[in-house]
Length: 506
Image 1 (tube, rainbow, N blue to C red):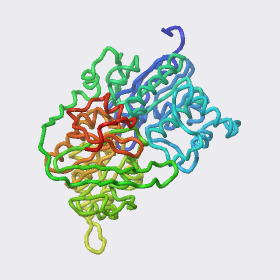
Image 2: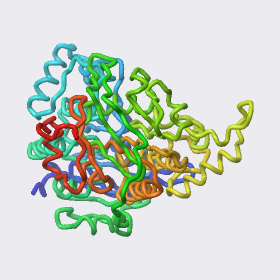
Image 3: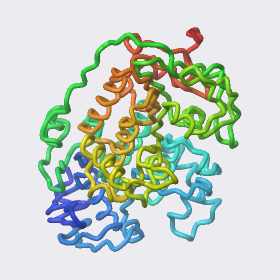
Image 4: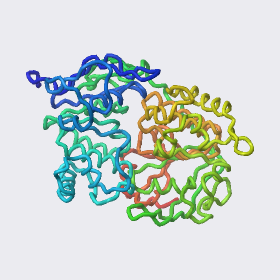
């Protein structure tokens, strides 16, 4: 279609080595003007490293980059942006204490005034249907809303090449549809996209070209519209992901429940929890669906014990009123928790994997606070082996792992504790198909051992795959529960807007 024009971006034999690992080995890739180009690969395949090289955040050891036909040496992200390259990262780089407008302003040319930036955010948001209030502080936004901020910030630089790293991992089906309208519009205007995603159906809908990476090398280039999910999986991991063995079980007694749990929001942009009634029984997986920012965060803080403002009687764990208990006391009683934010909440970025065990596991703590180091390392190694975590040993810092590998480690740490109740937020966010199937399989195995599992996820496919019952959260309220077999995607989508009407709490 643009054959006479030079390629928008062409990478030639790019290699990047780190101690103990070659992240990219002789990678070549071409993106044409106005092309949506997917980069597919499992966690640790080298996708994010490659994107950071294009964006000037990482220097390649070998190879060359051509942009619009010219050889370029992209020394830093400022230079990339000057060339017309913008990137939306999987881990957002926003300052919590600043407003949306101030965050966007920081990434732009300093000649604009804040008022101008605010006006431009509003017009871009309106043009692309991205709903956001420029005056809100970032720390009050849901993950899905932060994503919008990052996308608007990228769009304001009028990019010729937009790199998106896992952009839909935090969006509802309706929000993904909206984002795809935005992206297709950009492509039709001649912008090129580099799109990293684990969701094969999205790649097939949006992209017309796809480069597959495995262990840092290109293993295939294809037109995803001509492939099936199974054939893309084979290109990516050399096999199809194992089928989940879901079997109906009769659940046991209620192990965890809330009774009319109501809580005022802690900050003006939070969500009030309004008479939440929730039950999770032994041997069942219960899912909570909903658009990010409808009270899931507040609910999880209360259920995990990070927020202890609830009435003692509002939350019961194994028959005890625990509304006033903190996280450590709830863990002692058998409740474990995987938070949504991996780095900073689920793990301390600079600590080793072994030391990160101590955040929620005390088996290696001796009397007087002494740590049994060898025991700690054995524990960490067991999780690395069992969950196939790609890491440079138990001493690797949490922040050195790819997002999906860190997720496997954190989920593994909590599953390995054999909890009686497990709360998991976004269990497979940003995790490749093979690892996602593994995590879901482990959650089902835990359920089959009699654990009560509560999963909060914005991925409906995931909830339909592993849950026995579903609730939907909207505006701080919880829908009645519905049997997964009776639920449909369309109905859950409607309930996400709070429209469950006649189905009052059963």
